[in-house]
Image 1: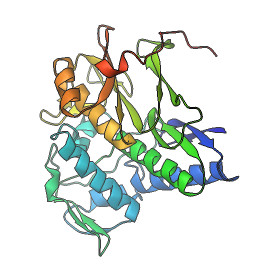
Image 2: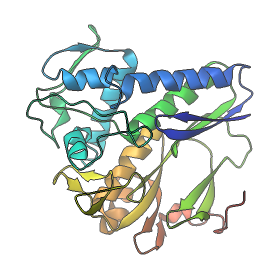
Image 3: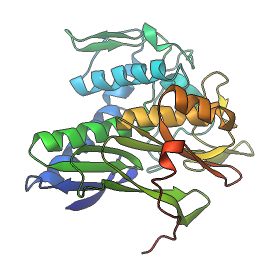
Length: 308
């Protein structure tokens, strides 16, 4: 069974195998709840409360504690290339309003704000269920929130009895349980220069998949074309030669942080980074060249045009 719906400012697509009769309502309600807690565009969200009250403990849900712990893990895993404290630079560069609803504006406190900060100063108290950000720190989960939401929602569906589930939120994908066929879940990777074509299609048995791109979530400001991938060491938009990169990892959130890191690291470090982290990945360069890790090459299906 399949379902499509809007979530987290993106299009979501879900597949569920032998799920409960109300699986669609269960899934959409859960993802909406996570969005209400994690969005940087909703002033009442727990994430915005953390940002507006940096320096003080804020009581949050278990979900938000998990999100912040995940962001810290992603920062550590990528050696700081994924850094959710770049929010002030995103806003400064023109990404203040939601691309889905321009009336939703990211609230920020009127104090001096840092960026590219170290996350080991964040205090999480599981007993009191509070998080304290250092004064002047703000955080934005970005697509990691989508990947983690997909991880959580698919796992909860299988806990409710579904044999298998897949959820894609804006292209950030998580799976749980068994795929619909022995060959796996069918994943298509879109050509960033021609959305009527695919780079390739693959079958995967489990895990998460995420795509990061310098050609999506773009805008024009200050006479320049800008995108959402910020290099935390410079505070500027990444000048990577990678147009898009898709990463396969054990979970959706891990795939997303590694995809962000690969974009920032650039084309020259693709082989070293994927080898170091034992990742499978496919990139398309700004010149249109497709490069993939060796294990994926025998698995790819030929490039083909999309059919409606």
